[in-house]
Image (cartoon, rainbow, N blue to C red; front, side, top):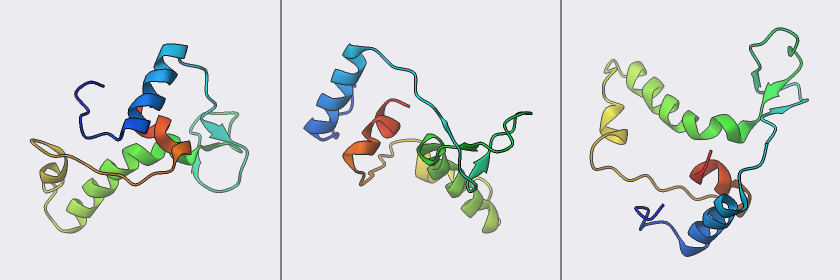
Length: 100
């Protein structure tokens, strides 16, 4: 985390405190009828919680965008090399963007 010099101080404080207290179990599914189905037999009515998959969704959406433009490798310019991403999130989503 010390490398994250561009993080806001409250985000650093929250994340540091959370790690110092020890990671806690967290449910990653919900009993809802929308979202990504859990691909496991016996869990057909469960959906993956939106914030568990959202962060990887930023990357996968970029890959899909590049593919739709006929340049499968174009996504790399957004994610590799000397690139920084900035997200505007609420406090309730800090954990998903810094730890998970």
